[in-house]
Image 1 (tube, rainbow, N blue to C red):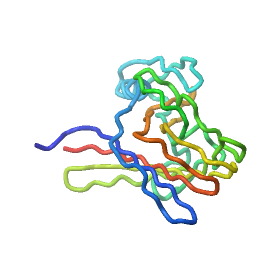
Image 2 (cartoon, helix red, strand yellow):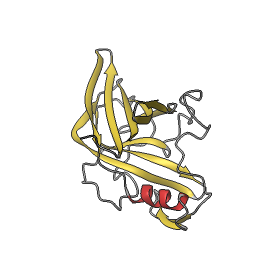
Image 3 (tube, rainbow, N blue to C red):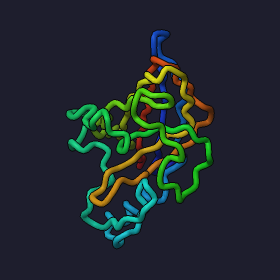
Image 4 (spheres, rainbow, N blue to C red):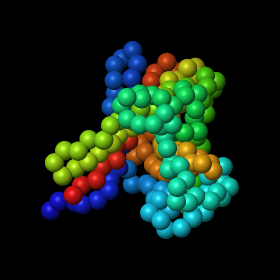
Length: 198
């Protein structure tokens, strides 16, 4: 029987001098509260109170900017268009393995942008064009990170931060099945695919 649903998948790849290691690819389970509240508002369900990534509530209503992760406006014609220094928008990564709860409004322990101990350099994000094939439609977005910190960093959580008119909100947070180690001078690519099936 065919599954009719909105689904999300993620994959992580680590690459460096030794080549590419595909370390995890699985179904995302973790759309969080802000996602459905923002969707409800855009459907005309009234203004919603959503906690932004700092924990303060914002009002989000019909017509407000819809949790954008690509501020230059769309698709493969704008590859990696978020500023490389923007670690408060798009795909983000962290070190906490604390279980996801529906009320999560941010990563628990996000890795900051930089090249100091415990930091990763955030490159820009890429948002694909919409692909329709048979009974499926999908879009994916991905981001690359570089470890120039001098030591290895274990990634345990990933997520998606989106820009709105009134603040940045977390729409997805996932805890990985196993930690992903990113050694010094290695790169990490995180990719999310959102898919609907008829």
